[in-house]
Each structure stands twice: as C-alpha cells, then as structure tokens.
Amino acid sequence: MPHSHSGFRPALLVVDMQEDFCPPSGSLTVPQGRTITPLINTLLSLPTIPLKVATQDWHPPTHISFASNHSSPPKLPFVDSHTINNPLNPSQSYTTLLWPDHCIQSTPGASLIPELSLQHFNHIIKKGTDPRVEMYSAFFDPFPPSPSGERVCDSGLAKLLHNEKITHVYVVGLAGDYCVKHTAYDAAKEGFQTVIIEEGTKSVNPGMWEECKREMESIGGVRVVGVESEEVQ
Ligand code: VGL
Ligand code: ZN
Image 1 (tube, rainbow, N blue to C red):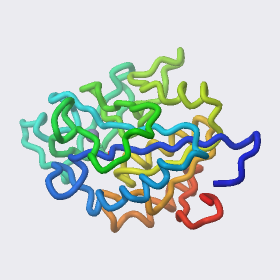
Image 2 (cartoon, rainbow, N blue to C red; image 1 turned 120 degrees about the horizontal axis):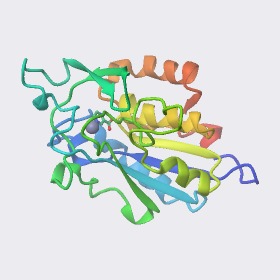
Image 3 (tube, rainbow, N blue to C red; image 1 turned 30 degrees about the horizontal axis):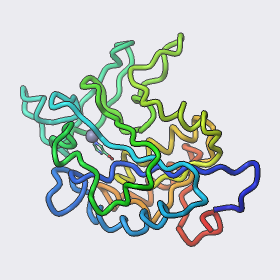
Image 4 (cartoon, rainbow, N blue to C red; image 1 turned 120 degrees about the vertical axis):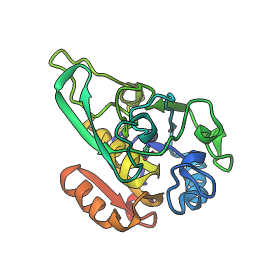
C-alpha cells in the first residue's frame, strides 16, 4: 500500500468467502474460488491495515434471486433473468440473473470457509437479507435512494467506513463479476479510493473478467491492480 500519511487510512473488504461459492461442494461455485484464500490471509495479517471487514451473502429461503422461487413458469438458474421492482418506487426496476439456492441464513453453505483467518476481522457484515431485492453490493440494494434519502437496504458498511475515517478501500473475495464489482462501485461512489486486488478475486464467468475490469475502470472509478503493483506495496 502507499506509505502511511494523513491521507491514507485503508480498509480491507473480504467479500463472500463462503462455502456455497467455493468448490467442491458449493451450490453456486466460482471456479477456483478457494485458491485465493492464502493471498487474502496474507493481506489480513498486515498490521498496517487498521480495518478489516468480511461480508456474508445471507439470504432467507424465500429470496427473490433464487430460481426455485419462480416456478410458474419454471426458471433456470445461471440462464434466466428476472426483473425486480423497487419496493419503494415500483417504476424503477433492476434485471439480473437468477441463481441456485445459495447462502441460506444459518446453513453450512452460508458459513465463511474455515481456512480464512477469521481472527483478523473487526466486523462481519451480512447482506442480501431482504427477500424482495437482489443485493450484490455489501453497501446497499441496487436502487437509488428516494428523494428523502430512504433506501430499501443499507448494511451499515458506509457509515462504518466513514466513522473510521477510511480513505482507501481494498476489495477482494467472491465473486469478481458480481458482489466484488458492485461493492467496489458503491465504495467509489461513497468517495473512497477504491482498488480491487486482482489475484484476490475469482469470477463466476472468468471469460468475461477482462471486459468486467474495463467497465469498472472506465465507468466505476475503480482501479484493478495486481498484488505486486506499487499500489499494494
Ligand atoms: C453473489 C451471485 C449471487 C456474489 C451473490 O457473492 O458474487 N453472486 N449472490
Ligand atoms: Zn446471493
């Protein structure tokens, strides 16, 4: 990381390192999802990072993102999309893929993988708990806040990072093309210098990662860097 000075107080966000996203037995496996754990544990061991936060996708069984909850007509996970209306403003909608059942609250699949160095985390944030909306970002649901500032979901992560006077947010975890991407977008929108450490993430669709990176850098204000880059030294 850049050398410490008054304008540098980093946080590490470790997104959704959960059994259901990991081979061999997860229900929504990210290829090679487990292989990033040693690098993440190295980052977690750095005493120069004052705030380390894990997130957990934490869905009720009735969650709208599960293909199994859309039976007439039947929907295929990974293939069919669906459109979610904003519960606070039905004229706004968000279309995204449907998934297999995953990360159901308090089930083994929702647990953080045991090889992750849990003792370093200052906070664990749960997301995706509202059955009515998809929530890839660890900050908010995908809809803009209402004119009065109300949101469907707010995990409290933005307030935590602002309270801790964080300047830079380093994001790793799963999946690069979904929750890591949308978490990084929201971190940048919240005004944090936002960096994804490339070797610290894997994607559901690895073939799309290069395009995903370009999109994040061009429209998201997110930097994607290798662990050996100056940025992370
Ligand atoms: C995720 C799909 C569905 C993720 C969560 O953590 O990237 N992807 N729910
Ligand atoms: Zn999910």
